[in-house]
Image (tube, rainbow, N blue to C red; front, side, top):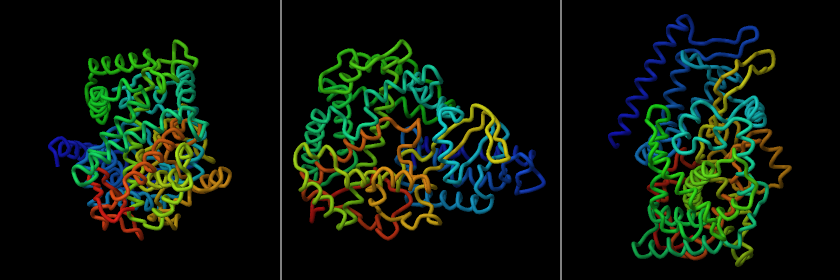
Length: 484
């Protein structure tokens, strides 16, 4: 493991030890604190420490803003995400539906276990459950200090509307699809040409083509070769992994935002920048601060796409279904591919790219007869809801049928047990449909044009009967062989 990763884990261990000592002073008499009158249940010190070790430390060690490949590989090897889900199940079974308060000495923090509580928090964002939590503001301010996710009203309203208008969050297919699909096809051909030349398709080859595609979609053809802007956001996001513990790279951030503004000013036809030039804006919009979140989201989408390709390679029957969908939808009909969209969504369910959904209460809130204080941080641990094998029979299996239901049926299903790969409610990712359109189109192009390039190397890593708790996308490789 790289030195900075060892240092991260050491720092985490020291922090947990300090928290444990402080907690002991707060609660010496009992390892289990039940709710008193008007109070939410509070975890005992040992359970809080176990949650920190099994859930929080691995999640943040992997990198919440940009992944650390060495730690992701270790997480797959040690099944750390499965262990984290197991810890959440134990706490839920011990303390009940919650929300469960943690006895932290420096801040108020709650963990959500029940579907109805998860849905309430998401539905009632941003008020009284703000998406601009302290941790999120500390991290995202490294590269988008005026981004909508960490803004408060009235600025948030203007910035959120800009994102929704440009990304067309309510449309299943973006109106620029005729410009975007040829870009996807072109980059897929580049990816496959490189893969054939080197004898396999690996993450670096795929990611280089995916990132180039993103630049072309967001900024236009003039940005196709602008690797520097991609390198800058990665550097800024690496600093953001440390949130308030890392000094901000203010000079680089200024250059990065200026570069984005230059592309927005150019508004190259056929790009999202051109769409941005046409939507209403105000002095509070700060358009160039919204674009970094698009680049951030598309990075995670690339990970989901590569994992989705692995899922299809490990499930021949589902792969045949994907090919049948492609045969029935030639050319521009591939703008909407329900089965391949469901494959991407399953990739995100099984291995969420946003494992921690964070909110922070802006005022006291009532939970039955109990009160949660204002300023409480709230954690929804996505893998727990997506893969709780005590509640979901298909928790560890590839089940695209979960997503192939009409909207009313799926909404009822999510109310019963939330599946939230793009979050949900008023703060749902506004790029959801655009991401699904582009990821499914890239999957389609790789399958259709690749032919013999999608045989997964080390296929034993994906046992269809029990898929791994973590899947390291950085080490996935696809060989030329029997085909998908």
